[in-house]
Image 1 (cartoon, rainbow, N blue to C red):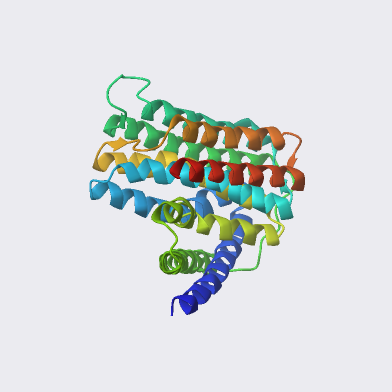
Image 2: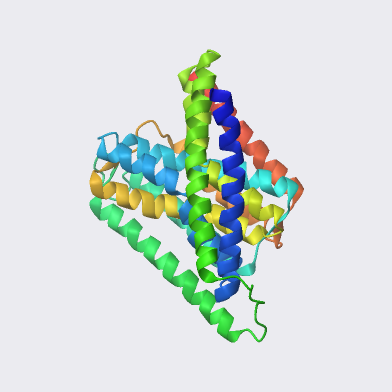
Length: 315
């Protein structure tokens, strides 16, 4: 039965991602919002819902270590795993705005997270408390405000207008909502049944937690990015990944820390450095305007190497 559910879940993931991306693109063209901002604001927030649920429930249940570990692991997988794999097949365009603002902003909040978790500012036990969480939520608000404000200004200054699609805005919103619901539900069923299958083969819990669980909450990002790339919309794919990483840190940890202070648990300085380095690598490799197939392959190999390092420390 698990295998049937796995197959149905995979179909749901593909269909949900396709509907989500199609609806998001329609909204972008309707309101002349850039593909990147739609990818970050709508698709990025939506595909981060599994991380939000896992982190928030962990905080409510008193297992605050889960929140930071889930975010750090997902952010590494998003950039090195998903973005690298996507670029390996579909070179990803990077705009000047991406290099000037979004990617540096992602690096900045990643560094801030490491400093907060390593108790750099106050010297108390390594926690992210309510005041820290409020700062993160303010950064989330600023990112959203600035992104949409810049897009509206660019649209007014531009002499050429995007061609609008002859699609009802409510139809587009419906596609996004239904696609997101199908995508997240399918991912949840897929992860649960994949874990059951893995355990039936005698795979140990450490390997399952480091692969299926850690990467499972990022399946929506993977599906949405690949679907966007297939539609030749790599800016939306990039926005999905960079946006998800920013939201994971600012929105998810900001909200979770309001429930109870968050601690780093088993997350080491190496994990934080890899998370930050992954985004820096993205900016360096894409500085000339795109992430090539070779660059994508290098990023994915970095993810494989990091995963091997994690497994070797568990043995």
